[in-house]
Length: 541
Image 1 (cartoon, rainbow, N blue to C red):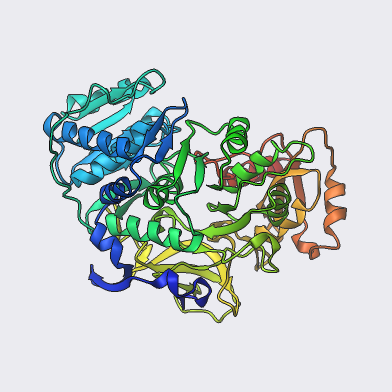
Image 2: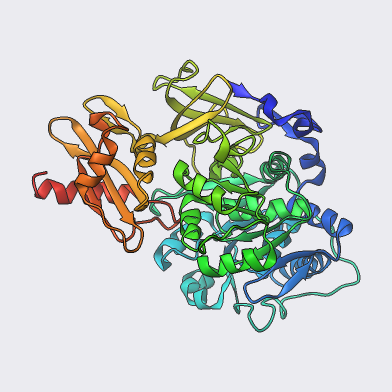
């Protein structure tokens, strides 16, 4: 078991206490219990930095912390008085990244109501299924989605459509102005948000994230990343995901920094903002960083970025080094976490780009315990592969409406395969379901992908198992190339020969213009496996 590594120093653990809840003794920041919810965090920051800009939206509208608090109080009063929203109600949100999304999130926090995050990238049937699963009492959405929820309206659910915010603030007609407003009723153990995990709608699970999960994660991030009021960041990913909502927006409200909101991922506009506004920090996925690298100007160096954090999946080592050359003042902080861990999990203690341990996802954050289990549920020795298990103050207590075997004695089965070294650093080598079974040999794709990324022609790659009658599975690879570049299958195999064991070199290689992605902008290995299995079975490869 690995917990409380010394790499963070004593300041990272200052103010932690033991809190008994749900049959478990949590090591949690005392401040997360006294603040109680994110609304109280906003109120604290607005008192400390009232005139500092909190958010800047896609249209360039700026909102200070004082203004954000005023908008939140007025909208919370509207929801309570006009829409009858009360503590514990589930309210669906289907909004683009916007000031309105921020206000809604914080207003529901004040009321003790639950934000149910509905992805704008999903189709109507998918969204309806998720909203029905959550039994929403109301839905607040951009106006182009209003007609998606006609059946809910018939059943008494209120639907509040709003404009896109370009010409006027979307909640301008949905505010109640008073001399004094109702007090916040949120408590640490109340559910704050329900976010749905990746997968098909039938397989999605609603992760029930409580206020103490959110606040512990936010404070933990601030301690290990050192986020300060002078920091500025952008949101290149939708805020209906855990990273955007917690690891970016909520963290910055706590720290008192500034957030630039993007409605959608536009690499050119994001990099224009980085250059113009002297952005200091970006937290996103490997796919986003790879796309941003394509925006690099000849001989350009960007000095304002002091830190980058990557989550979602392992970042290719070659791409980390390329980013570091482009942004020389930047420390690359590889992170690992899930929706179920409120984003927080591990973080690299220093600059991964210049470390001999580049490729590691770092050390456990304060308040979290990690273990590596074999298939029989026994902890494996240091250095051996197994399933990553996590428990602690940022880990959810339950899923929506189901008892899941993914939670065992407060331990979360992550489904990720990895190992710890003697220094307490973790390596995530693959998803359990993505490990390649070559004749009984378990082959993780991460090392093979890193080797392929060493070819300068390669923009992006994914490695996975393809069914084989003799070996069970053989290694397949999908590769996309930079514009104007060419490679052959044999070029790739020849390059890999001195780097990899023979059985790890991809037997099947296909070049694609773009690697397929999931709704969450992760590489879609499930689709690739199905596609390769069907195509190469029929061709006899």
